[in-house]
Image (cartoon, rainbow, N blue to C red; front, side):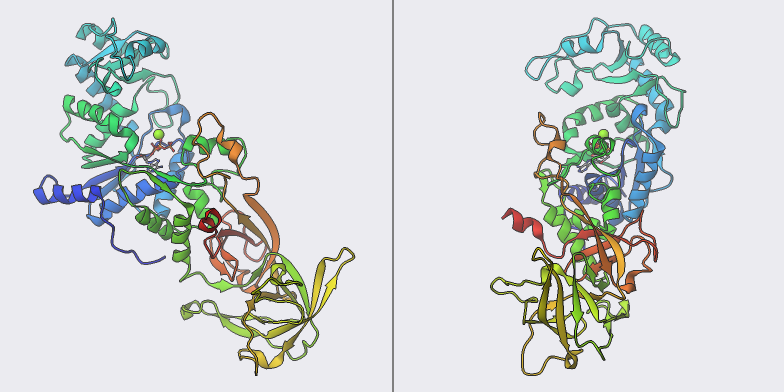
Length: 555
Ligand code: ATP
Ligand code: MG
């Protein structure tokens, strides 16, 4: 919603600038390569903004490529949600969606090429034996007894792997690199495995599947990617990326660059763990507004432009990118502030009866003090009002500016009101206030005195009931998955969702799903994508409070 600011520089842009200046590339091609095995999360949003953002800024191209090499975990549901998320974030990939499975035949031929060059062999050792032969970080591995098979035997066995002659896991194809390499990724990594699994696109055409490291670099090369940007855990895989491309007949050799992955406090950024939250029903689904998924954040009311601004603010580097939620919320608030219409809602009502109501009038008010184009609505007044229970204190603390017995406040967009009497139930709880208004104060300051406090209110007769969902952080600790020994679910916040029946202005009753509002003094809210129905059932999600409660609580 806000206007785009100029992109901040980062080491990848510096590399691209140099590549364009030296003529190494005339234009750039990046890609975003998710595996369709879950919904995208905020970390992916960072990667999307980086890859698509670079293509946009440099007038290059960015591909969306599904890395669909693990058939058991992948589905079209995930692939579709990923496409929806990329588009919602405001990006469009170049041409058709690409799939690693488009290259299965080519990948197979390149593997045959490696065998013919004496650079790949069929392994008969079991997975356990392979592990024993691999060595450790401090000890070199040792060669497999099958490493020196003849080329013709390897060609024959690999063809028979493909033909389905061997059981799952009975054999693998390995790259023949160096069992003594200090980099374990180069100790003859497996590049094909046997797996009889139904694939969403190739169905049962294949019973062997290429491994990620082998597939990824070749897919990049076939697509003419110039800058293959990934997260830092792939830094040690880069020599393998380069080895494969140096040894197969592809025309282009993309360069891989690594940046640090985003970690957002009080949440988790791992599809596997998010899936666990869904499967164990700790949340209502992938799009639960407490989830750090793009779908969840969207449903909660985070805006695409706010998320893009967040990505800009956290930057791109190789140093740790562990980010406080306050940065995200600041970006979202700033995005919504200038454009979300402001209305009144009551989440914890206390009834007020106006003793001198006769002659009181409704008043027209702007939806936004600085955005007249958002229009106006009538703010109705009535004999009975709701105010927020917290806005009344019988025994006010020092500096209290809101309502108290005998005190006055301004009702937002309406009269100055005095509390004359407090009504309590048998147990001493305040259940109602009897108040009077100063009829001379509609749109005018009172004569001869100052009234400091302003509170929001609704006329009971005109208010519309609404379900209001208030969210808090999903976990009680900043890094719920820091300790591998402890299940992160132990740190789930039992109070992360509070559903209240509240009241809203009649002006919002026609709002379509995914409409953003500021509820004055309460925060930014968004009508729910799934459950909200205009006029019929109003459901609002609190996107974010108005003030930053995160940093303060932690200070
Ligand atoms: P997860 O561990 O959540 O499954 P992943 O890296 O396995 O994530 P992919 O689908 O392979 O998921 O990711 C697609 C792209 O998104 C990759 O290029 C990956 O580097 C990037 N990515 C994933 N998580 C993050 C993160 N937390 N921060 C930045 N980029 C990320
Ligand atoms: Mg992955």
